[in-house]
Length: 274
Image (cartoon, rainbow, N blue to C red):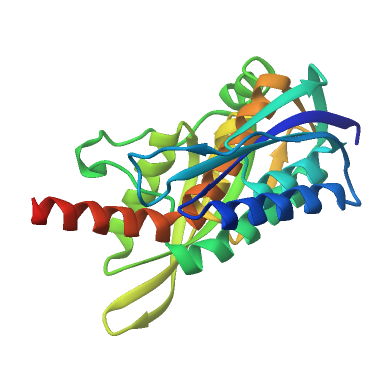
């Protein structure tokens, strides 16, 4: 696979200036010690102070240029959780179907482990108010979507829990549709029932853009992903940039939930006092 060049903007936040300095030093040290990536132009900006924020009073930004395979850049995006990823080159990239499946599998495993500790990312508005999505596409329609719209046909297996199998399947259909995926097929099977709760595996055959495929992988952490077509996925720099930034933001959102919870509790306490 060809290499790509990106620029990471990694933000550090803390209520302790010395702690933030140490954390940034660790980030810089880790970047310098990367063995699968070429890392250059590491720059740590000055610490900024926000006197109005007594919980996260200090912030600092680290910029770094990284070069490596898409697979290794994806890993780095999840490891460092930059607030922004800028793709410098190439203007477009071709990724083999089998290689993309491996990358998606690693994304699912990594984010799935974070979800066990910090909760789910798949949060939606009232799905019951949305119309029923279309299920099923002709072979001609699928070919047109793949060739003309550069979309991807794949199978996606997710684990879900609830009290009613049909209700769970209906929620998944609307969630996939809400994210922008077209549903060709979907089936579900109860794996276990305990104390009135069902553990269900739902398998869906979906058609979507490259970006939506990564969005769904990040939000649902599927237990299995299989890309059916095309054999080679052609991806533009803006698509790569959006995917990398989204993945980094997913990780950032999950690992900062405990801090956000404290901030909410702190603000609620201040409101009650006032």
